[in-house]
Amino acid sequence: MSTQTRVLVTGAGGFIGSHLVKYLKRLGYWIRGVDIKHPEFDETAADEFELLDLRRWENCLQATRDIDEVYTLAADMGGMGYISSNHAQIMRNNNLIDIHILDAARVNGVNRLMYPSSACVYPEFLQEETNITPLKEEDAYPAMPQDAYGWQKLISERTCTHYREEFDIETRIVRFHNIFGPFGTWDGGREKAPAALCRKVAVAKLTETPEVEIWGDGEQTRSFCYIDDCVVGLHKLMRSDYQQPLNLGQDRMVTINQLADMIAEIAEIEISKKHIPGPQGVRGRNSDNTRLRQVLNWEPTISLEQGLARTYAWIEDQVRVKLGR
Ligand code: NAD
Image (cartoon, rainbow, N blue to C red):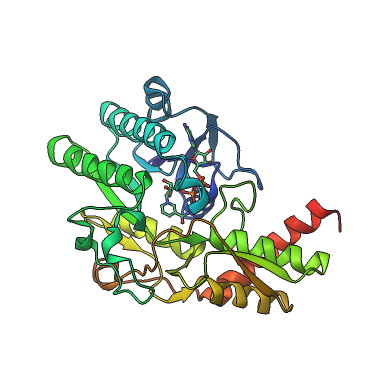
């Protein structure tokens, strides 16, 4: 009989899920991928892929059958434009997905479950300046996330913790800080800032119109973590015995204006930034990686410049095809 660990990746048709499946396959796991859609930009690397709506309990039972470990990456998700204007839908869909997959995992005797939370759980009152103090895990309380998306993540973090304490299932909780890279949503309204800016710069380059729109004054700050580092960290945390929420991101903070300039430099064009009204999220955010280093004896290593170069190249290709150039 095979002793290969059987892993379920939910959201395997999405950005982080599809990259994680590839990484875990290389490590030798057997993988079932589940999503409501196939990966948009690539073939799945999963051994088995099922189209299932995980808001439904019976579909979660089907997804978790004969599974040892689950990475729950399925969510109704998007960038600032999406999460700041779909509060009820995000609450409804993500609460249904999260509770059903966790409880189905318990019923089916899954050993371990990874829950992807977000830097969006941190209180708005700690993120009102551009040059903020990096956020430590314990800063999440007293809780006051900016959007329903962050509140929902906090509730699911706590649900995972109580399931671990009271039922026979190990849960791990990661708080991602702006993961980016190729093979992710880059247009249509759900894209996040790095992908949106790569697209805008690519359009500027290919159409020779140098104006690039930026939401707000562009002085809002964030840190950005490349996808290849993200999947390594996710797997390390899953294998660790650490049971509390853990930041996973880079701790180099840049403004959105700087991010746009870095992408323009990679594209080898001059841009003129046009600042327009738009959702900006919190004013400043950065990850404190002290605990990440302690717990995993590791931290992300791929620089923002390297990650953006790979992401921009892929998005420029997508834009070129779309524009027929
Ligand atoms: P994504 O949107 O690319 O992937 C999510 C996937 O979930 C999609 O493929 C979507 O089709 C699927 N999904 C949505 N509803 C579903 C349903 N009812 N049943 C089955 N599948 C469904 O997003 P992502 O960037 O890969 O994010 C993965 C996880 O990480 C999410 O929980 C997200 O909240 C979290 N996260 C991501 C980031 C980031 O920077 N990308 C930051 C913080 C947290």
